[in-house]
Every structure is written in C-alpha cells, then in structure tokens.
Amino acid sequence: MTADFSQKLSTLAAAAKYDASCASSGSSSSAGGNPAGKGSVYGNQGSGYGDRGSFGVRVPAGVCHSWTGDGRCVSLLKVLYSNVCRYNCAYCVNRVSSDTPRASFTEDELVSLTCEFYRRNYIEGLFLSSGIFSDPDIVMEKLTAVARKLRREAGFGGYIHLKIIPGSGETLIREAGLWADRLSANIELPTEKSLRSLAPEKSGKLIFGAMGEVSLAKAQAEEDRRHKLKAPAFAPAGQSTQLIVGASGEDDRTIIGLSGALYKKYSLKRVYYSAYMPVVSDASSGLPEISSPPLLREHRLYQADWLMRFYHFESREILDEAHPFLDTALDPKTVWALNHPERFPVEIKKADYEELLRVPGLGAVSARRILGARRQRPLNFEGLRRLGVVLKRARYFITLGGAFLDRFDDPSRLRRILSGGEDLQLPLFNF
Image (tube, rainbow, N blue to C red; front, side):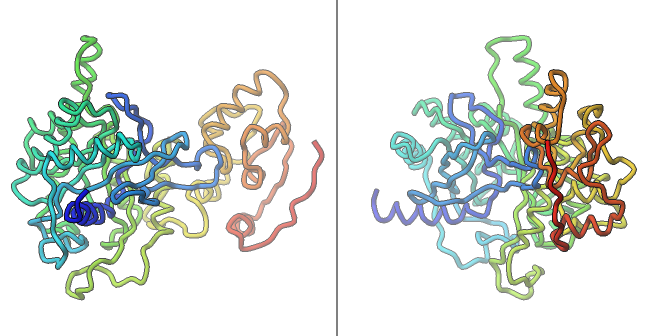
C-alpha cells in the first residue's frame, strides 16, 4: 500500500466515522458472510442498556469493531467512496464549506482493498457510504458498482451495507438491494423544519421516498421468493436509518414518535441514534453550543427504541405531552411501571407473556423461560434468579403465589431507591 493510498484510506475512513448505522444485527448474509451489529443486553437483563454503532478499536485504517446480536465481535471496513460533497449540512464535517482534506476512491481501489482485507481476515464485511459529489444517480451508481464487482467479479462472500442516496432512481435502488445485505437512507434530523435549517439541500420527501422504494422492493422480492425458489433476495438484512440527537430542538417524544412510525410504515430493522458531536465552530451555523455530546440522552432513546421493537410498547405509552423527555435517572420501562401502579404487582405464576414483558428487570428471554418452567415445576424466587430475572429491580413489581419479596406503597420512595437516590438494606430471605 503506497503512502498516497494510505493517506486516502485514512481520510475516507475518518470521514465515515460519524455514521452510527453500520450494524446488521439479526441478519445473515445472502452470500454467506457474517452479520455485523452491536447487540443489546437490555431485554434479558432488564438493565436498560441500549446500543449504538461502534467505531471501536480500528486495526488497519477504516476497520471498526462491531457486535452481532448474539454477542460475537466482528469487523467491518467502514469508509466513504468520496468525502467530496456538494451539500452544506451544518453538522457535517464533510460539508462543502468545510476546510477538510478531500479524497475519493475508484471502484477498483475499493474492490481490491475490501478483498485484500477480507483475505487477511481483517474484516468480515463492508460499510460503504459517500458524500454527494455529483447527481444522486451518479453517486448511487458508483456505490452499487462497487458491490456488484465485489459479488460478480471478486466472489466476495462477506456482508455489504450500502447507503441509499435520496433522489436516486428506482432502478438503481432496486439493483443495489440485489448486491447488498442491508440498505440505509439516513433521515438525520427529526423534522422537515430542522432539515431546512441545518441541511437545506436535503428533503424529507426524498428520504422517505427512498425508504418507501426499499420497503416496496423488499416486499415484492419476498413475495416472488414464496412462489419461485430461485428468485433473488433483496437486501436480506433489511434497511435502517440514523437520527442525530441534540443538533436540533426537538424533544424525545417527537423522536420516538418518528421512529415508531418508521418501523410501522417502512418495516425498518433499526433506527440508530447518534449523539450530536460538535464539529463546527461557526456561531452562525444554527447548531447548539454544547461542551460534550448528549450521550445519556442517546442511551435513553435506545432503551425506548428497544421497548418498541421487542416489548410491544407504542411510542405514546413511553412519552406524552406532559412528559416530552425521557427520564435521566431511570430507564423508560421502570418509569412506565412507576406511572402505572394499577398494573402491578404481576403474579408470576399466572401472568401471560405480555404481562411479564412489562415487569422491570424481566426481559423477553426470561419471560419465555418462566412460561416454560412453570409448566414443569413449581417456581420460587431463587428459581426466578436462575432464569435470568433481575430481582434487584423486579422484586417490587411481582408476587409469587401471592407472596411479595418486597412491597412498597410509596412510589416516590421507590423511585428514589431504583434511581440510586436512597440506599436500601435489602432483607435476607431463605429459599
């Protein structure tokens, strides 16, 4: 690798690092590659840990570590085709007015680089995006051509995630889905008003149009595969998007409401939340002046997102007009439970799956284990612990055969205890 090429790789890898939507949790590559994506332990542990795309420790330039849904660490080559961009998005380091070094790959360079890293076992997949250096159709064709050459000419069997360029044509989007495992069109900001203010060249209508085209093409491909065994797969890992958190003034209720609508309308696999990181020092940019990224807010949004995707919560259950922001002291599932005392305690020996899912400290896996275990043997509190229930949190919201492990009739004090604001000497008990 020449010094010039190394510098190009370094520039285009650094330019790609702000895109969090590079995970592929829950998918298998149609070409036999490994899916990549950072999983979450929120569900079974009840701890409320969300997830975000990880930039991790890079081995060679551009290689980032990510995690699969089952906890395996995998590596992706994460780069831009070009960081030359005609757009002037205020929050983006690659905007046209930014004084940053510019570089572009050729199709053959990217194919060669990806295959070389793959052969050396540096990577298991490619995440490829680009600045908008020309007409959207031209940019989309370049990205698609890289994926097509990797599959057809190089026999690449790894995972491929391609960015969809909003405004590109239906034919190009549909071809991209034939070569890539996952597609994504980043919405970036929660409202059209914010887009007009901070990213004036972008259009919510075009972004949603791209999402709709991917959703329609995938549905048609799945229907074809039900009737024809050899019909080609289309983006088998689905599509995702990214929202920047804290660059504009929308509240969490607006963000979660948008995410819930995207999941329903476009069957998205993931919405990624990226805490706004200041990269612009211009006071006239319209961006907030903050000392550090709002990482806790990002974390709470991932927790709320997890509730919608896996716990059957509606966005309106998580936040309402009176409470437009997520609680900073407690995860949203616990907040919901404290706000609905009429739903508790839940009797573990009789509750159905949906009731069990609503118990803080009890996740989807442990709920299924409880349903299976109670058909085979009597349950006790120690048995619940072995099934994965986090009794430190669940103990206040459950009964077992009518017996409480702990009972608090003062919601305010319970909130202080669960948020760490009051120490409690937990009673010892025998099993």
